[in-house]
Image 1 (cartoon, rainbow, N blue to C red):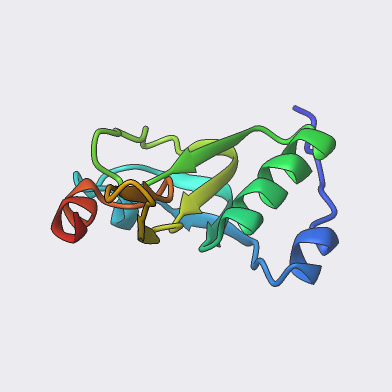
Image 2: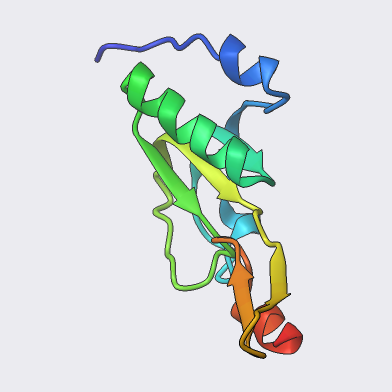
Length: 117
């Protein structure tokens, strides 16, 4: 088996902490699952896009994890980088035609979006 090493310095410069061998069970509603080789939390869309772009450049497989429901993680864990998507902002903007534009980031919980609408 070939073991790959990755230079995470670019992510560290963006204040994104890369953790190793993180147990994923606490991040799922079923509370089961093994460890991720690498794990990051992102809280902004800029961080999310930077990490995904970096993964493409580094040829590191990645998985974007949201709230942890509707996912079952193997006890063998996840190879590559798990990106915990905590981009949860919800914005409401009045429009000229008396309507409201509701925008939600990709990690926003549907219940939170519904409460604000």
